[in-house]
Amino acid sequence: MTPYAQLPTNKPDEFLRMVGLSKEDFQHLNDKLGAYIDAQKALNPLTRRGRKDSKLALEDRLLLTLYYLRHYPALINLGAVFGISESYCHKVYARTARLLAKVEKLPNRKVLLEDPAATLAIDVSEQPIERPANGQKAYYSGKKNATRSRRSS
Image (tube, rainbow, N blue to C red):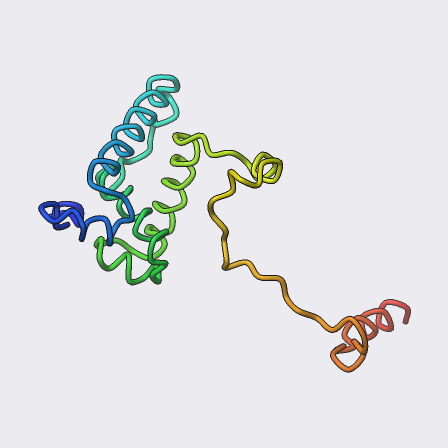
């Protein structure tokens, strides 16, 4: 049985808490994603030649991506839940996230900067590293000078 089939579909609050979308929104996004994939296959029929189909159904790939974006678990744990390896879990996540960005036509960073009211999501995982402005010599490792002296000799 797939992880999507094991979700509590009769309790919409739990589904929303686990996935981040309501059941109807999840199904709508799944339908859009399936239509986009089918359109791409029809557009380029030879690109799938020699490639095996995914081990996971489309619902499970979407669920894996949304669950990862909602909870940020370790990929090895997420892979164990879905019965796949850690590397394949990352591959499924990356591929599905790219497809979701194409399907939903997300604006790029430049468009978001022009209209600050439209900016809704902030990635807090990327934080600038604080470095001292004055007195940096105390924090300097000296590795740069060592490589320069090796080059000159």
